[in-house]
Image 1 (tube, rainbow, N blue to C red):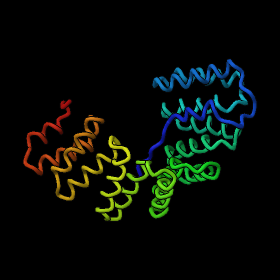
Image 2 (image 1 turned 60 degrees about the vertical axis):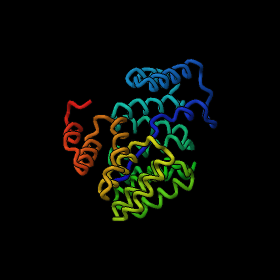
Image 3 (image 1 turned 180 degrees about the horizontal axis):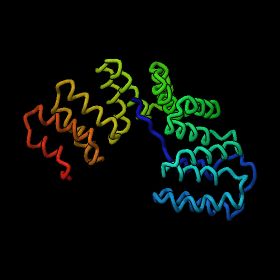
Image 4 (image 1 turned 90 degrees about the vertical axis):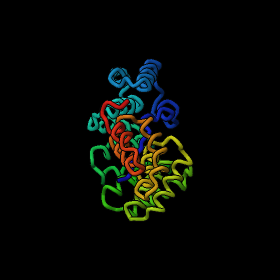
Length: 259
């Protein structure tokens, strides 16, 4: 499955974009900025109140609708996020950020056809590796793996440092039985982002499956340190320890009380 990555907050776009339909009053700007600050602090419920206030003051300003959608998205209120981002796109249809965000939320709602359309719309306005990678995820879920692979290649063509696209290329290759290529792409992801947990997990799993558990263990240990409660990481690390005969360590890793 494609590892779907999205930068939840497009904060640079919120307050610095050109082509605004109308100048924003200071009070609206204040509430939007406060909502953004609260989202940075992982306080989305408080951000909702400021976003609602910004919209009440100036409903024709898209930034308030966008940050409202961000707060709902973080809270898992995907239908509400979609509605808010539709409002932003209606008010400012040439801003690619709204369309990319709509692609994200449609993906979360398993509306993959719509998700793909939103990402494609965003790409027509502004070619961007994140939208290409989002499109790859939609293609994958629609059982179009070759289109997913091409979309990932388009992502890295735009940004050769974009680790998530390499990771998705690795998973596509693994799905096709191309294990050497899968490992190569995973290592490419790690060369760009050494702490990228999905790639650490994939590298460890592929090394373990290839019969190299000692090489697998450092990748999996690093991944587990970053995400201690991830059961897939724990399983693969325990299996690697079993393979080298360290059964007590494997049992410790699988223990729910292990820190």
